[in-house]
Image 1 (tube, rainbow, N blue to C red):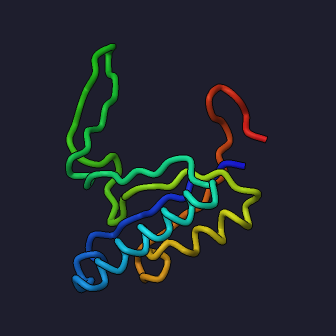
Image 2 (tube, rainbow, N blue to C red; image 1 turned 135 degrees about the horizontal axis):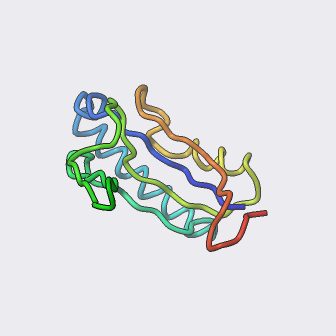
Length: 123
């Protein structure tokens, strides 16, 4: 089963962290990534730039309209994700609990099963 583990960032929370705490998060992600590779459960991981660098695209009267910034006004934004393939939701939650962000109040980690990929419904 495939699951998306998404990490939601609150810039105010990150700004309040010490350099040591930020380094611990980075190191923790490094260890987590290596463990996923070793177990064979990692499909893909990506980190995203700050939403201030995003572009929102919509089409109006047949013409694209592009605006800067995030789509929604929110304190939190999607900072990155891990796409994993594991036995079940319980295992996905077990893995997500190893992400260092889960130990920091104000940062969120969400687990969602992939429903559709590559033209096929997931089992």
